[in-house]
Image (cartoon, rainbow, N blue to C red):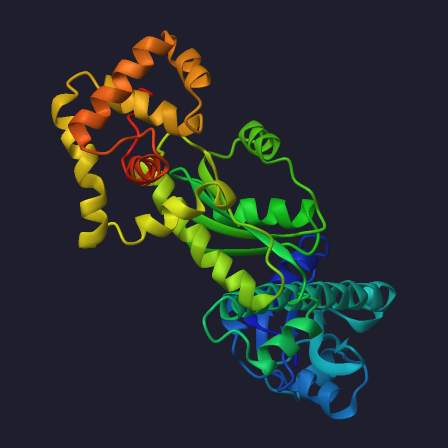
Length: 368
């Protein structure tokens, strides 16, 4: 239920007195002055307002009548209505006969301000409730029928297929502003910010997005997006929650291992990301042992760069040699050297897989 408060009452007073030469008072539903051109009268009772509240009609008070009422000056006191409900009183000081011509216009303006403030309050509540609901729906217990039902009533479409994007923003960037831009451009988007520099955007799967062009657009608008992790299409809430966790891992993986990559896709990095989550376990430490043996003798990083290229080109010798700008014989020599130092043959499927997985856990040099 909407009620007048001091800020709204004083706003009505200030706007009215910017036009009228008369003092204006705004009282609440108990006759207490909330806003006034005479600050000393705020929080005092207004008997004229109490007459309006008791009778539900306009009360005019001339100079003679005012002498018999406490805290009242001559003027017109009008009921303020919102949704046909009496919520307060508007009082204009002066002789009633001088005020009648514009008193109703002033009341209409005041009620328009009340209606506008109510709409703002409702919109703000709705936005905040939607934000709270989205956070709850993406949590582990987000399948509660009550939450899902409320989300449907608020038009959030919880069962719509979505693709999660997790943005990492640069210093000083507003996740709230980016959220508003995405929501206005892509209807039915979900945007949740768990930290000032992070924004989760769940775009509807029915809306295609060119990811590189999206980043170019954001750059052009002045947003500093350090990187974005993009998951796969999720059908329903359970799948979306799982994918949300994956893109969180993907973003952290990209920050540590692929610092120069701004666009990270789960489809391309799914296996390395799964391994990276367990990077501190002994089994993965053993996986890196052959590479460390190579790196210990690879003073200029040539062998590791060759191995990265070999993995990127799926073991295709000519494509790898062309990318490195070397002859195939030079490539063969380097691969033999890698096999010698690591004890793993990269020309076999098992060897290539082991070395590939290890390479995916090593941070790429910034100069690469």
